Every structure is written in C-alpha cells, then in structure tokens.
Amino acid sequence: MKIRKTAVHPPACGCNNCHRDDGSLPLDQADAPTVARMICGTIRNLTGRDLQVVVTATLGRASGDVTADRIEVRDGDRTWDVTDHLDSALSFDPPF
Image (cartoon, rainbow, N blue to C red; front, side):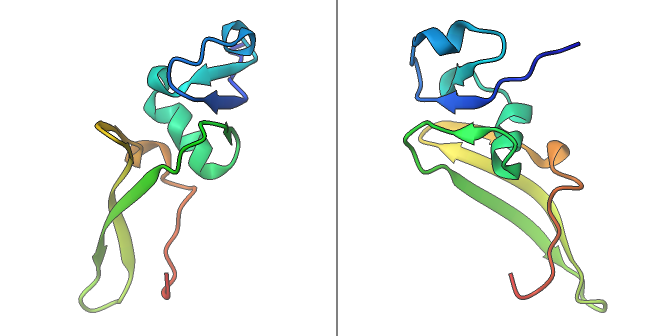
C-alpha cells in the first residue's frame, strides 16, 4: 500500500514532518500527481505561495462545450503539467 503525503510545504523545507512517509513534501520535490491533488483539495497547500493555474481550453464551435486541453501549475520557473491527473476532477460549465 502506497502512503500518500498530506501536505506540500515550502521548497527545501527540511522539517521533521517532511521526512515521514505520511507527512509533508517540500514543493521542490513535488511531482505532477501531487500538485494535482492540491488542486483537487485532497492535499493541503502549506507552501506559503499562491500557485498559478493556467488552463488552455477549446470552446466547441457548434456545441459551445468547453474542453480542457492542457492544465499547468506554475511557481516561478517551475511548471507541472497536471492535465492527465485531473481528467475527472475538472469540468467546465460556462460561465467559468
């Protein structure tokens, strides 16, 4: 059974909680699935930072349906492509 982290801390945090399997993870060690879990609210964002979520979407010409093509989370120079980890978590019903 894989134990998941419960929170993401600031980069290079180094606290005792970040060393436990069921504890936190520094942002600079986070992978795309972990960042996606922050967006979904299943893991806490304790980074002390506002992360930028950028969605590139297509608006259907005839149907008006909106489809997310790419979802990125950005923090400074670091970018995580979380598109494949959020398929069922995000839906778009205009207005946004």
